[in-house]
Length: 423
Image (cartoon, rainbow, N blue to C red; front, side, top):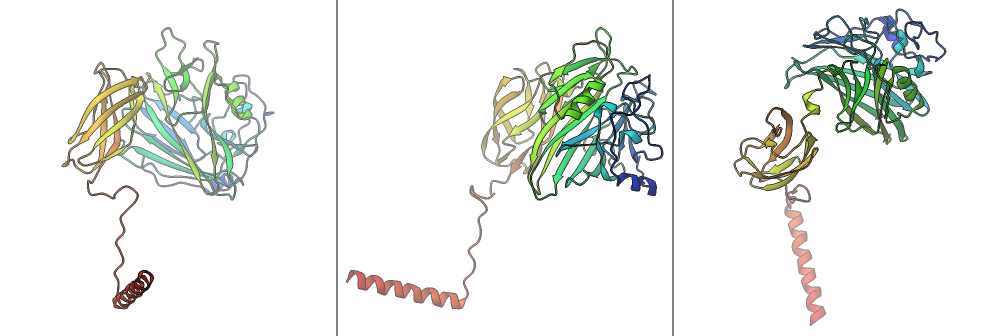
């Protein structure tokens, strides 16, 4: 959808107000923790109408996802939500929890266990841009303020048609005069394939956490996948997940109770200096475990090399095994590929003097040649005539006529002093 930015006067006034919500909100029998809905003040929502996923993004960092493989049912509770639901980014700093305005969602919310929090303010959301290709993903940008903390947030949501996952980056900027300690949370009340019950699930290699359906074997998963390694995680009953976020620390445990009304969350802890910022990135997947959790090329270090040089590199990722292959493109020969473990490999790159300068995609193939992953612009070839080590070479300023006269006089004086000293 390519709609212009929409904001009514009522939504603008509400977005700028601070909403404090209480854990004492009345609970409805069908879902413990249901909070009283504030009517007429829901978030502005932009929908990425992709395939198979439709991603609804709220202007206060909330989401709802529709999977065409499970038609007509949202994958986050409330599943009937026509807007966004109980999933989003939350931040704790200075003893205050900032979160989406869940109680204003028209279809309701069961986030009562979050306790008291302050809703994001100063909310803006962009129109959907992009064409949905790998080179030009669909994008939505959300910007908020965190009350009077001096922190501001910026989120970019991206989706590529055909993927069963979408990505999001979340940046906090500290506009205050002092450093701030923050805990960033991404979590939700997951609704697995049209069922509010599931089995908590974690993949330790990637640090992903979420849930699977109650079938044996499981055939449907919802996973929170940290692209930036997380400091903590949890997979438990949804109310317990909200309680842990309210307390400021996730437990790093997975509930052993099967087939429960479950949720999951990730946590990142950061100290942001005055005037500084920090960014975390994550994916959320729906359906099969995505191939990026089975084989994924994440980074190359160092990520550049000059024409005519030989560079030893370390490649990081997932699912590495002897027999895997890597291709850095024309003009770069790879040798001495050694798989250290399932997340690390080393290699030697020989860059031809004629190799084209610029970014290169790094294409990896797993050991059985069944999975391929591309790290877009993962390595860069630089010019052989680039700056020498130690910084750029600066030209010597030209000397005008008066400067030349002074230089000659100075040299004569030095000569006279030296002659007298050694005569």
